[in-house]
Image (cartoon, rainbow, N blue to C red; front, side, top):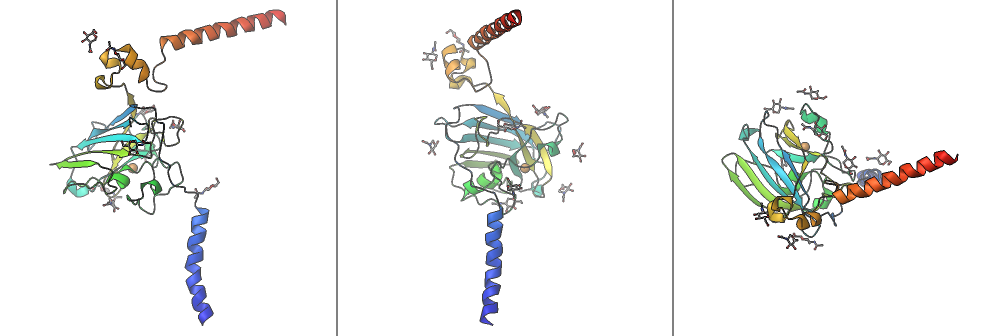
Length: 253
Ligand SMILES: *[C@@H]1O[C@H](CO)[C@@H](O)[C@H](O)[C@H]1NC(C)=O
Ligand SMILES: *[C@@H]1O[C@H](CO)[C@@H](O)[C@H](O)[C@H]1NC(C)=O
Ligand SMILES: *[C@@H]1O[C@H](CO)[C@@H](O)[C@H](O)[C@H]1NC(C)=O
Ligand SMILES: *[C@@H]1O[C@H](CO)[C@@H](O)[C@H](O)[C@H]1NC(C)=O
Ligand SMILES: *[C@@H]1O[C@H](CO)[C@@H](O)[C@H](O)[C@H]1NC(C)=O
Ligand SMILES: *[C@@H]1O[C@H](CO)[C@@H](O)[C@H](O)[C@H]1NC(C)=O
Ligand SMILES: *[C@@H]1O[C@H](CO)[C@@H](O)[C@H](O)[C@H]1NC(C)=O
Ligand SMILES: *[C@@H]1O[C@H](CO)[C@@H](O)[C@H](O)[C@H]1NC(C)=O
Ligand SMILES: *[C@@H]1O[C@H](CO)[C@@H](O)[C@H](O)[C@H]1NC(C)=O
Ligand SMILES: [Cu+2]
C-alpha cells in the first residue's frame, strides 16, 4: 500500500527528470561585445495587414540590442493580442511569411512552455513579445520583465522600446539576427505580415557617413558592410602576389 503510493508519487517525478535530461535546451547567455551601433531594420510589407517597422541597434556598451518597435494599421483589435518574433530564416522573394521558418532559438528552447518574462534567459531569444510584452490594443501593453521599456498605445498603433540582452548584431554569434526576419501574428498564430531585417547605415546623429565625416565613419563602420578602398587595395596586392606565385610555379614545373 505504502509502496504503491510511493511509486505513484515517484512516477511523475521520474518522467519530469527524464524529460529534462532528454531536452538539450540551455539558457540563453547575455550577448556581449556586439559591434556597437550596428543597426538592422525590418519594414513590414505594404500589401499585408499591419504596417510599420522594428529597428534593432546594438547597445553602446556592446551588451544586448536596443529595439524600437513601431507597428500600426492593425486589421482588428479583436484578432489580438498580437505576437511578434524574430524568425530563423529570411522571407522568400514572394513575401510568403511561412518561409521565415520557426523562431530564432539557437539553444534548443521549444515553443512550450510559454516564455516566462521574469526569466528571459529561459525564453527563445527570438520571442520578443514573450519577453517584452504582447501587443494588446485594448490598453497599455506591459513590459513584464521590467526592462525599462516604455509602451504607449494610440488608437491602433503600438510603440515600444526596450533593451534585449539575448540577441546579437555579431554575425559570429548564434543569436545574430541581422540576416533573419520578423513575423507578426494574430493571437491564433496566423502570420499577418513579415519582413527581412536589413542593415542600415549609421545615422547622422551617430557621426556616420551621413555626417560626411570620414573619421567617424571608420570608427562606426558596421561589420562586413562596406569594404574600404584600403581593404580593396590590399586585396588587389594579395591577388597580384598570388598570380605571380602561380606564374612562377607554372614556369618552374
Ligand atoms: C538533442 O541533441 C541530439 C544530438 O545533438 C539531437 O539528435 C536531438 O534531436 C536533440 N534533441 C532536441 C530535443 O533538441
Ligand atoms: C550595458 O548597458 C546596459 C544598459 O544600457 C546595462 O543594462 C548593462 O548592464 C551594461 N553592461 C555592461 C557590461 O556594462
Ligand atoms: C529577404 O532576403 C532574402 C535573402 O537575402 C532575399 O532572397 C529575399 O528576396 C528577401 N525577401 C524580401 C521579401 O525582401
Ligand atoms: C506560402 O507557403 C506555404 C508553404 O510553402 C504554402 O502552403 C502557402 O500556400 C504559401 N502562401 C501563398 C500565399 O503563396
Ligand atoms: C545567419 O547568420 C548566422 C550567423 O552568421 C548563420 O549561422 C546562419 O546560417 C545565417 N542564416 C541564414 C539564413 O543565412
Ligand atoms: C500573449 O498572447 C498569447 C497568445 O494569445 C498568450 O498565450 C499569452 O498568454 C499572452 N501573454 C501575456 C503575458 O499576456
Ligand atoms: C485565425 O484568425 C484568422 C483571422 O480571423 C482566420 O482567417 C484564420 O482562419 C484563423 N486561423 C486559425 C488557425 O484559427
Ligand atoms: C559636410 O561638411 C561640410 C564642411 O565641413 C559642412 O559645411 C556640411 O554642413 C556638412 N554636411 C553635413 C550633411 O553634415
Ligand atoms: C569627425 O569625427 C571624429 C570622431 O568622432 C572627430 O574626432 C572629428 O573631430 C570629426 N571631424 C569633423 C570635421 O567633424
Ligand atoms: Cu513568430
